[in-house]
Image (cartoon, rainbow, N blue to C red; front, side, top):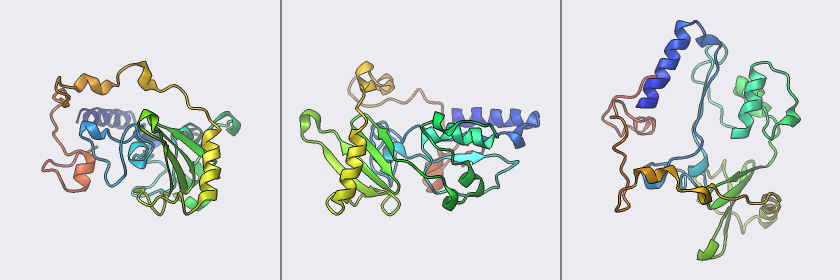
Length: 238
């Protein structure tokens, strides 16, 4: 609710100063919701802290009234490292593509045409206890077993199986091995979890349950519940 109110104030300020039609706004999240904190990422698998889709896939909204039409949809992946070159491209800034790990997707986003998407190099995603490498549309996931047991490995076709229910690791061993080599080529860095407790501990009760009473009162339905018709509150208006 607080975010909705604050974002509305930003939009109003842009409109008041006649800047709205020439301003690109990108709304996205850095990760999926924390399942232990009461979030739901259904129908995606797992949540924050995981390299499964529920932990790393999030909705994105791009708004540029002076250029992009309403109701357009783009279904190809855009990784977080792609946004800087993409927005530089949209703003008409000349840059050396070799400077960035990501790839500009502006040509395909501006046309909402997946067929003109730039070539996507393999992308590695790290999480607290798992890692993944994408070679679109395939995704190789390794969940670290640690002291609890051996690592687990998975291979998914994310386009055909976005909920990651069909593990292809034994059906396509050659592809799995190629992607395993890519994943192993980048060493595992120190987990941020070793640097202190996560912020969720601030909301933890002595008995281990969560206390989110610090949140402002909801005056409109969160977007996910509103989309599923699962809230009695009115939908939030931007």
